[in-house]
Image (tube, rainbow, N blue to C red; front, side):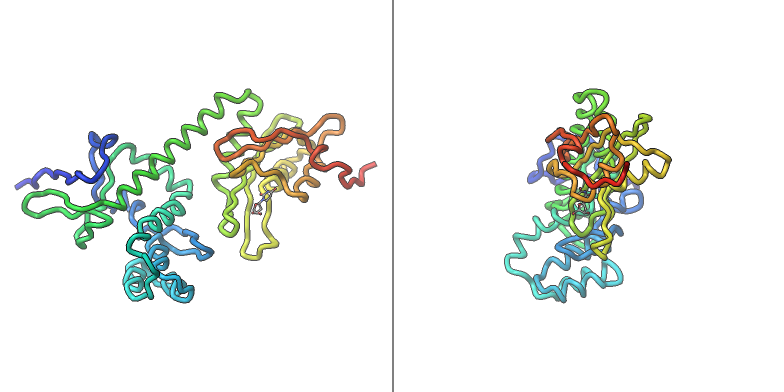
Amino acid sequence: MSEPKPTYITAALDLTETKSAEAIDTFRDEWDFLSNFFPVPVEIEGIIYPTTEHAFQAMKTREVGERYSVRDAATPAVAKRKGKKVSLRENWHTERFAVMEQVLRAKFSAPHLRDKLLATGDRFLIEGNTWRDTTWGMVRDKTTGEWRGRNELGKLLMKLRNEIRNESNDDARVDKTTDGSDGELITLALKMREVAYAPYSRYHVGAAVRTDSGATFGGCNVENASYGLCNCAERTAIFSAVATGARVITEVVVATDDGGSPCGACRQVLAEFAPRDAPLRVVLINKAGNMVRQTTIAELLPLAFNLQP
Ligand code: THU
C-alpha cells in the first residue's frame, strides 16, 4: 500500500514563495547539514561549540560554567539532555527563537554550508520528526498523513536562505557596476573575506592585491588563540604575492564589514612594495562590495620608515 500523499498544515506559515516547490521534510542523509546535530564549529559569546545543538542548549543558561559543561557533551544528543538540566535564564521561552536564529547565523557563515543551503533552492524546509517536536519541526499524523507543527526551525532556515541569496545577488552586481579594473580585485577581496578565519574578533577581512605584472593575489585574516599571532588579510595577500617573486604592488582592495582601513603594520608592509614612481592605490569596500573610500598608501602612511637607498 502506498503512503498517503502528505499535506502541510501551513496556516501560520508564509508560503507565498515556496508553495510550489517540493518539500524537504527530513534533515537526514543528503539533508543532514540542515539538522542542528550536524557537526560544524560555531562561536557564540566567546565559546566555540561543536554543533548548533550544543550552542543552543548552552545558551539556555547564563551560567558560564554550565555553558562549558554543555559544550563538552560528547554528542549533540547528550548536549540536548544536559540542556534540560541547566539553570534556565529568564524569558528563555520567548528568547529561544532569537537565540536559534543567532546560532543558525553562526553556522551558515561557513561558506560550504551557505552553498549547500542555497542549493536547496525554493524547497520548503521542514524538520519532520518522530520525537514529537511541533515547535521547531513538524510531526506527521499517521492516519491522515498531515504534517502538524509550527516549523520554527524550518522557517528560520528559509529566512536565512533568502538573505544569503539576496547577498550573493548583491555580490554579482558589484562586478557589473564597477569599472573592469577594480571588479576583479573587488570580487576576489569579497571571496577572501568569506574564508577569513576570525573566530575571536569576528571581524572578517578579505584583501586582494595586484602586482606590476598584473597578477592578482588574495588573502584573509588568520587569527589564533594566542592573539598576538593573528595575521591581517592585507599581509596574507602581500606575502602570497611576494612568495611568487613579485616585488611591486600597484593596487590593494580591502573588504571588511564596514569599509575599515588597514592597520599601521599593514600600511608599513604595503609601503615596502609600493611602486617608486606611482601611487599604490588603496580601495576600501564594505561587505556589500560598495566602495567606501579610495586613497593611496602615501596618504595613509606619510613618512613611512624606509631603509632603501
Ligand atoms: N585585521 C585585518 O585583517 N586587517 C587590518 O588592516 C586590520 C585588522 C584583522 C586582524 C584581526 O583578525 C581582526 O581584523 C581584528 O583586529
